[in-house]
Amino acid sequence: MGNNKLLHKTSVGGQALIEGIMMNGPKGAALSVRMPDGGIDTQMLEFKHAKDKFKPFGWPLIRGLVAYIESMVFGYKCLMISAEKSGLEDIEESDENSSKLDKWLSEHLSKKVMGALTAVASVLGVLLAFALFFYLPTVTVNFINKLAGETLTNYRALFEGIIRMIIFVIYLAAVSMMKDIRRTFMYHGAEHKTIFCYENGLELTVENVRKQSRFHPRCGTSFIFVIIIISVIISSVISVAFPELRNQTLVWMLIKILILPLVTGISYEFIKYAGRHDNLLVRVLSAPGLWMQRLTTKEPDDDMIEVALAAFQAVITDDPKDDAI
Picture (tube, one colour):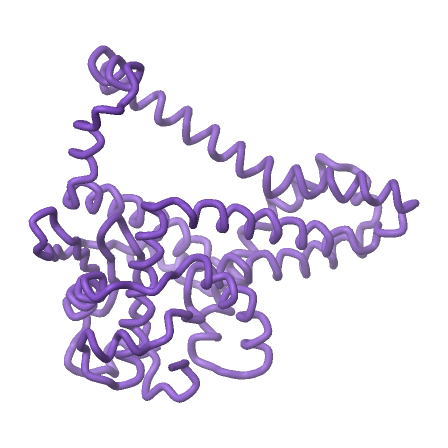
């Protein structure tokens, strides 16, 4: 069942976690986790918005970047809580196959040193992301453009965007084959199905949720692809307006980084628009993200749907108008 004839569209959103789901709605944020004993633990969390303290953070174009940063920080917090509650940390600590190096580090290094190592790992992760999604596409297009006799110069932003999408797809396809990631993607599917069930005006039961589509246009996967598409459009405009910048690799990469806040802001506004409308523009720009949800969402089992329902029911009110987009 799709979302073409929804009775109402909700602003409730969520995130798949380790053996759990976080839902954010009018009553706040709820985190539900399948516990080691088989029960479901639901915890309400406080989610403070920066725009409540500083109104300009809620302005169009600005609110997109702010919301993205907030969701990343809060999502990481929820992920750590779900890992602890589900027993994952205990399993890792008692794993007989843990390397001697891991055991030695945990026994001999202080929390400050471990924190520093975590920070270094985070920086390396950012550098790797930069290399994969900025440096590699630019260098690859430069190389191909030279082989083609500079005939691709006016279209370099487009080809860089295509390469970026290919890298992203390969990355998702690779991680989706990991057992733990696959289970998280199944919870992701349960999250989407539950939201669709509510939007279709059906009773929130496992049976009704099971029948819904797992592909939702307001998913973070769609958001990432919209960012890439809009980045290609803006980069193309800059490339045509300032052609002298296209041959300066480092300057060109710096420009693409500097326009990211603008790209994120525009993408966020489009996702909000897409949540309220269904027209040709929305369908075209949302299509790549919906296709990619075939990788980032999997069909959940009933136990996972029960977790999604527990989190969803904890954040909604009796009146659908309270959480409408």
